[in-house]
Image: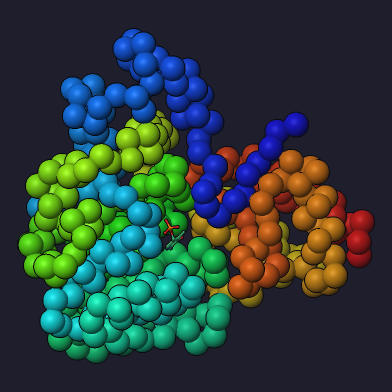
Amino acid sequence: MTVYNFCAGPAMLPADVMTKARNEFLNFQDLGVSVMEISHRSSPYIALAEEAEQNLRDLMGIPDDYAVLFMHGGARGQFSAVPLNLLGEGKALYLNSGQWSDAAGVEAAKYGTVETRDLRRSAGDLDLGDLGDTRGYRYVHYCPNETVNGTALFDLPQVDSPLVADMSSCILGREVEVSKFGLIYAGAQKNAGPAGLALVIVRRDLLGQADPKTPAILDYALADKTDSMYNTPPTYPWYLAGEVFKWVKTQGGVAAVAENNRAKADRLYQFIDDSPFYRNEVAAHCRSEMNVTFQLQDTALDARFLREAEAAGLMALEGHRMVGGMRASLYNAMPMAGVEALIAFMSRFEQEHV
Ligand SMILES: *Cc1c(COP(=O)(O)O)cnc(C)c1O
């Protein structure tokens, strides 16, 4: 039975990437050892690390005046690193749109002055509105894809200070113009690799003003200066992320996977909208193309739905405990066939229970 894994994160990786990793697991580049057993300062590893960075630069069109950092601590590590590196004695504005942006603001407030703006007209309806004059902020933080809530912001916030984005669940999933951002960060385990790695893309003129108490492993300037090897980096996740970047290139790059992502999400939302049995409560203009949340009209059937889905090879559809219901995460690695299988199951379940 083919298993489709809809987990929100750590999420499925492309089958081709996993196969390649398996094939060279014990013997990387004929060295007779695994890539995870070699020094991060050895020439084969440095070549791999540089190639991964270059491929990410190519895929996202990252300008030369931006540093690309491979860091520890996932996205939550960056919730701390961003204010420690950028906030100084100033203040920051956090745009709150869901569970993750809320959490980022709470963490940042430990380190300095944070103001928040709630973008929710309701839980499923976001509005950037007019942010007014934002020149007084050291940076403005937002989350373009709220993984838990299944909501997304497709327009960029119009701001006059550096824009910082938590792209953990949408990096490489849709096109972005990096030059519009001061800093982009992402935990790798949704769309870019396994857990344990955070990607940071930061305009270099923002570096060098970190709070003196910033832990060395969270200091962007130090990470930039040492090519993300101030200490031992998460070498295996970095290697796997590099394989994912190569895979995205073979798919035709970000534009091609983004088109596929929209097609997958459209298919599922259309099915949900057409059915009286299921519903999605997110306004059409801010529906995530990565995390599709849905509810059964009769929530008493939830447990049964999940059990039968699992038996049919459709894994990890349970919604986040804060939101309830179901969530199907359709990251880059999820093929259209997985969405078709899910819809076929949902349709069958509906017929059996109406
Ligand atoms: C998963 C996620 C996080 C948390 O990531 P960790 O690597 O577990 O810290 C933060 N932000 C967003 C948008 C996420 O999807």
